[in-house]
Amino acid sequence: MAAVLERLLWIWGDDGKFVIDDRHLWLLREGGGADRDSALRLMIAQIDSFAVAETADRRYRVRPVLTSLAKKPGAELVQNSARDAIEMPYEEYWRLCEWARSRGLQIKNPSKDQRNASIRRSVDPPTSTVVVPRPARPTPREFVDVLDRSCGIATVGELVAALGTRLEAWGVDSKDDAAVVEAFAAVSASTEVRGRLVVVRRQEGKQKGRHRKMMKVLAAIDAHGRTGDPIMLREQLKELRRFAAGSRFRALCDALGLARSESVHTEGRSRPRSDHVRSSGKGVLPELPDSRAESRRLLAMARDWPVSMGSIVRVSLDAGEQRINGVCDTSTGRTRITSGALDGRNFLDPTSAAIAAVGQSRPGTELPTDGWAVWVANGRTLAELVGERATR
Image (cartoon, rainbow, N blue to C red):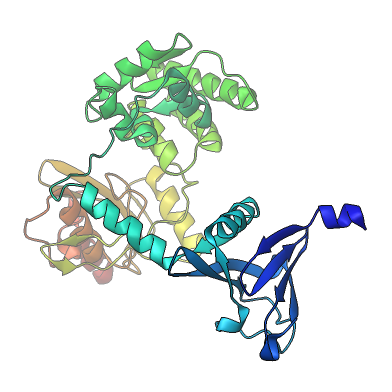
């Protein structure tokens, strides 16, 4: 019993005391009337904070505040009332604060907060400005970590996106690709620059095998690109897509100088994105959310077909200095763009495809009103081609 009593913490007040052990807090009241010799036991886990009200002569009335999930131990506990508070001198109040901080409980003293706020207002000059610290200079380890997360191979855009303003703090212009590549090449002996790609010579860790395979694919793409073998180049690009899909695949192809190559666009393209091409403030019909896999497959395969096969024909559209290629099913009007920024997008009719293509390549110009008259297949417009077939 003596050992148990020695572990208790006693906080003495004028009209009562707090007795605290490892799990409980007892509020013992000593006074007359209905509160004479009353006791209240609380679980420490039930207590959210202590509310403090300062009185004259540095005395404090302290009241435990329960959490919202705590159950009231009995009818004698009335929250937010003076019956739960004990008045104590500053020394005992300080001991209670020390114990509360050790248990992670808050001491809410509005009077103290007001005093601190007034002191800050009197000390800080009214014209003081907030100085935003500059971002710290990136370390060589951070550069290598960026490459590790991207499997040891990264484009300039990925490097800039990963470090952001940290490059500016280092004195590197993030808008200058050559400056970014030069900074990465100089930061570590384990990295090298290949065109617009920054690669790790020897990747360590769990992605070592993946890095080795990607380096093998990049070497094969470089070899087939020099020899001009489109079939083998397409096969290697399919292999690269296994390791880097979506926007990362397109970024790697752009860094390799293959962004405009027909071999980049394989029939394994994922579901088209729902971009809404807008020009001159007018909404253009979005790309077609075609759920029929067979129709999508035929339009994708038509890239390698002759100029015409059945009702599906290969078409082109001149948008200024740029020529946009596409595939159109003249029986339904469904059109798929196969080049440029809208490559792989499906549209309900040739007019929607023409508006999207011209609006994207030449913003601000007059948009076509009849796509059947602007798309050309083998020297004839789609309207002429459909008219000839109708008269046969």
